[in-house]
Image 1 (cartoon, rainbow, N blue to C red):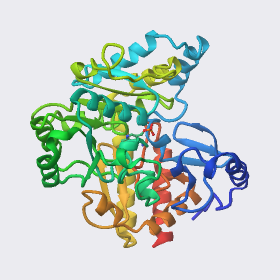
Image 2 (spheres, helix red, strand yellow; image 1 turned 45 degrees about the horizontal axis):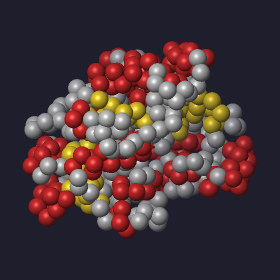
Image 3 (cartoon, protein in one colour; image 1 turned 135 degrees about the vertical axis):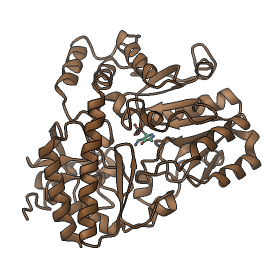
Image 4 (cartoon, protein in one colour; image 1 turned 30 degrees about the vertical axis):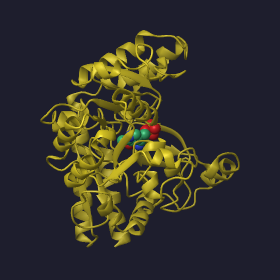
Length: 437
Ligand code: PMP
């Protein structure tokens, strides 16, 4: 059983020490800090295909894929060529370009209910802007979100959020004014009676319901049959908008995201969508969009203000477009094959060693809960053995496999995960399960 990657990582330790004096916690996004699993986050130097190399020159198989974007693998040659070509023509003009039009056209062509999109630079900006637009359109202020869903660090959407907020077990964040939090109603995911009760009580105040199309930020929790339909029925009946957050699932679960798998719910498509991650190909690009009559309320045609110096950035747009154009049927087929092989290895090894586990899926996105029994929402997701996950994470890291450093996250694979990569991961899973059992 070759443990190839020692727990000590001198170059990363030194970089973390430097980083901590100038960057809070030494990281620019909290989940990178390894706080819930312990140890030193690995500072990465370069990446190619499914592999990462850290500052100590050690190679890791990447099952994070930049938390979703790197669907084709790292530094894909054709995406790199598109980026290089765009960069050679200038980095940012603050004026419109053909590239951003092409990216918007590609998104609109793929996601049938989306008639128009506005490009932004992060998923957080996309959801923040979608919420503002929904409030401006309806003239109402209350937003409904679901516990365990993460929509970025937007004031109104941090309450009971998933991802890092779940990883750190944080209550609602200081710095969010009571007035902002007071306009947010948090409901359990997949709970139609709770949704009906909320609409019965405050239906005329609700501007929007925002939901992860399939939740991926409390681990993977797909919507139960009928849940999306209930969201559509109740929002429509009460004059609220339905916002489907496909930042994580968009262009990953299928060519047209989760919508492409589940189909348009009975009663009609969501009014607004948010996208990010894959559509930027690893660069800062995201979008919100949907019904043309709603989008028409945005400045400059309408009164709802939203803007960005780098929005539609030509280099980011080139990366996103080149990535989306290469997301073919073969790519999605490979994502399925890879994730099925990894999940089968987990099932086999964990069963053999008596480790409680539950695997859940949204397309090729999957996560491993360190518990038994179905997970339908955040309360279930929190009820797992996070300490055992931490030991598994480090057992994998010692064998050169980099998982997301939290058990509240999806595992991400890419089409560049070839047979060597899969075999490497499968071997590490078997050995790591034996180690932690
Ligand atoms: N929505 C969802 C569903 C997400 O998964 C994320 C990021 N993990 C966001 C919004 C926020 O995106 P960003 O990190 O680009 O701000």
